[in-house]
Length: 100
Image (cartoon, rainbow, N blue to C red):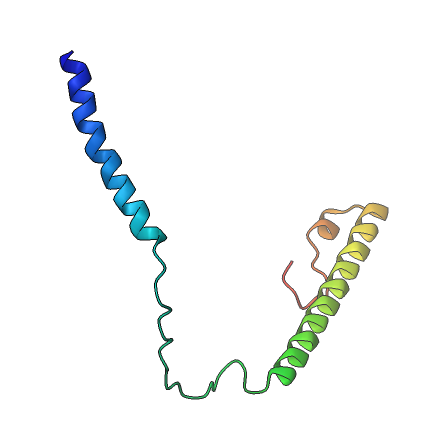
């Protein structure tokens, strides 16, 4: 019996508190006015967006071309080593501007 009374006396206040909080959350609130911010005009990252996008595309195209050139040089060096395997050919560097 004591256990039943303990459970009852602890659960009733919790249920009442939950009901009060639920009712408070359901009540409509008037919409708050959005604060007006006096911001300076953006001066970075978006000044000349079209030029930045074009420059980024050119930079990517240049990087892809350099990587493709490097891969071709490495493949040619590997084919040359496979045709005539030597110790010097194994450690020879290609003429690529990228690091091996």
